[in-house]
Image 1 (cartoon, rainbow, N blue to C red):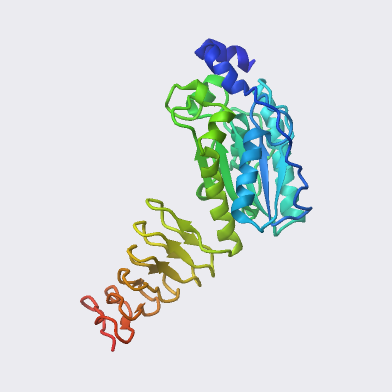
Image 2: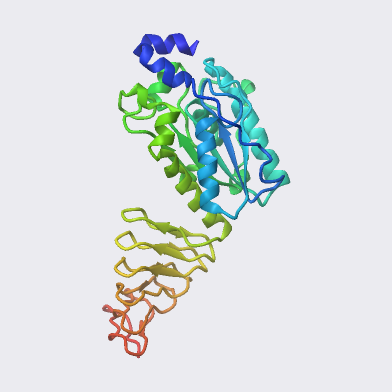
Length: 343
């Protein structure tokens, strides 16, 4: 049993965090947003939590709904024991995979967010895996999802996912995120949480830590940005110090001042805020535009001519790129060696 193994590993301090004797909260109903909502959270609760999505799932669903309103967001609590007998986690993988397949087939326009906490995070991570882990009898676990199912999943958010050290101690294989889900996955871990980080703070692995310190909000922010991008919604805005914004085809990308240049997918314009880095449009995309006071826009080879508004800095085209064009009243365009000058 997992409880006895945990006690030998770290004493009583870790038993409670991993057992997750959390207070019982009202369960978010599975059909709360209708049979085919715009989005749905499929959440696997942590060990010892009551059936449903658990306290972290509650907080996560509420935070996500606030961020993507008026998009309706449903919630499904993965049906599995969530007990100290970790091998029964395979029941959770089986139930979650069956639900994901059902939603992909019956609600193809619904974008799913796969999420979980602690043991539930491991369950949802295994749901995305490309193959059955080594040493596991394929006949005893669900088959991996078909690659096309990933098109229906907007994000994967794993709170307090047990790391390799923890999984090795539990005698379980490490969680490997499938290649179709890597770019849409975020792993959120409380500082020094002994279960998901290199730290040894076992007391940090509790629902209270994750809901009280704004950690759930990190996951909600990521999922909301992925849902907006996949649905062609408003441009994602990246806070200072964040990575470049990426908008879905047809959607604009916006980065706040001081963050890396936004990259717009084909068909979407790129816009850098005043003081931010130059906007970059990919080959075949529309001309990037920098607002007054912003840096010069740069058009990639084969992209339309970069245009700077009146009063803005000179647009710059790379070697071999099209001639930049400055709007009336803007500074003279500058082309590097090999590039043509606009008029």
